[in-house]
Length: 420
Image (cartoon, rainbow, N blue to C red):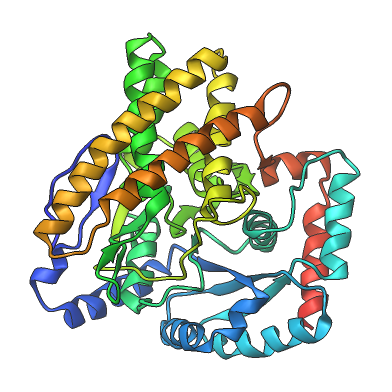
C-alpha cells in the first residue's frame, strides 16, 4: 500500500483502499461512477492495432471486464494497421459484444478508405496529420468522439494489459468524471514488476525519462531558465510519465495537440501543462502491478524498439527547449548528456538497493550498459533534430475545425457508414 504523501502541485490519488475490503470498494466506486453519469457522459477510447486481436488471452479478459460496467456511454475503438475490409469486419464483430442498454460501440477504421478521405481533406489545408501509429489513431478517434458532441469525459487505455481489471478502469475515470472534484486531466501510474522474472521493468521511464527530466530541472534553474525549470519539475512529479492510461475532459481534448510518434505520452503531459491549472491536474495509482508486452532494446537499430522510443522522446524535449528560449549547440548538448548519465547512475544505485530490499533480481551491469546506450541515443536525437525541424505534433481539433468548419460532418459520415 502506498502512503498518503502529496508532493508538488498536482494531486496524487493513492491506493489507500487496499487497507480495507477491495470488493466493497469496487462496488462503491462503480456506484459513484454510475451517479456521475447524470452529469458526466463518459466515453472510453481504445487504440487497437489489428494484431492485438490475435492475442485473445489478454484481449478477452479486457473485453469481459469492460462489458460488465454500466457507466460508459460510448466505447470508441481506434482500429489501425490494416486496410483489409475483412479484418475490419472481424474487429467490428468482436467489439460488438461491448454493446448493451447502457453503452454503444463504434470503430474508427483509421486505414479505411472513408477515413483516409477525411485525412486527405485535412492535408489539403496543409495541416499536418502525422504518420500511421497510435498517436495518429488516437487523434482521429478523438475527433470522432468530439464530433458526436455527447461527451464530457474521455478515458484512454491500451489493449495489451495482462493485469487489467475493473478497478483499473474505474479509478482511471473517477477523478475527471467526479463533478465535485473539477479535474481536467488525470494520469495513471503503477508498479512495473515482472512476476515471472522477479525484476523491474519500465526501463525507458526508470533509466531515461526520470533521470533526464530530474537533471534538466536542475540545469535550467541554475542557468536562470526558471520557466523551463518549472516545466521539467512538472514532468518529474509524475510517477510513471510513459503510462498509456489517462482521462481528460472533453474541453481539454478539443485543445490539445497530439504527438504521432513515441513521444505521445510526454507530449500529452506537456499539453496539459500549458492548458490546465495545477489544481485541475492529478495522477492516480491504478494497480499493484501492471504487466503488458515488453519492447526489445534494439541496440543496433535506432528505428526500432526502445531505442526508437528514447530518440523520439529526447527529440521532443530538445524541440521544446529550443521553442521556449534555450539555444542549444554541441557543447551544451554534450554537457546535457554527461549530466544525464551521471544522474542516471545515481538512480541505478537507488533501484539496486530497492530491488535487494524487495528480493528482486537486479542486473546492475546491464542497467548501466543500457544507460550508456541511452546517452548515445540522446546525441542521436540531437543530430536528427538540428535545424528547422518541428515537433511531431498533430494540431488540435479546435485548430482543424477553424480551418475546415464542416470536417466533423465528414468524419461522422465516414465512421457511421463504416459501422453500418
